[in-house]
Length: 240
Image (cartoon, rainbow, N blue to C red; front, side, top):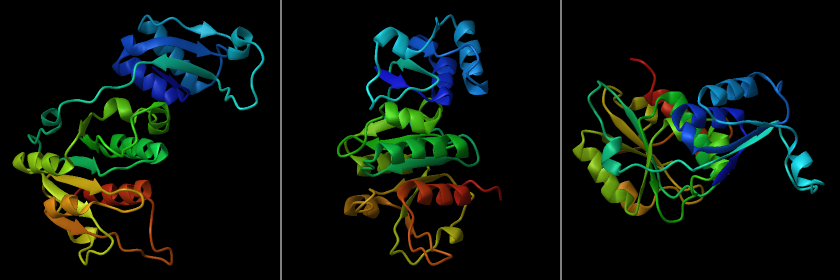
């Protein structure tokens, strides 16, 4: 069970999986626009709401505890089979593959970006990767509900499956001489982002159809994985 505190994340669960919300609490009936939408959607979906401070029910609050305007206990989102991610009926689509991204804050930001840029699905690695936990879901602000994801033991094989579905695999590598601004955008792309410290593994790189870099335009030489993904997705998703 996950305890979510971001109203946008809770709202997404209520809209997509209302039965997954096991409890919902708000401190007051007037907690702000986002929480007002949570309350309205919960009641429309038949989800009961408790009003009042968490302190009133649990006694004195420890100094390390976070207290916000509300929270919900929800069942975590479930991964889907890999083959369910790949539908290439439209003229152009975007997918995202993450090669052992370990920081939950980064993973949550990547899910949020995926939801913003219309990514069709995310492929996560089973080992040495952050799980889709409460931190990820809260940072994602709904992205973990709206963007389907698959968890795979072998990323290289997953990339091959994408290629068999007419999706081109685009790896990001700061040493590449090709720039992301030069790629052909009138095709399906799966963008592969590497680990925070080491980037993509060798076998992952070898499975990519093309490797590109994101050249800096100023004195700062690099970006973290979430910021780099945002820049790349903005280029790939830009209308022709």
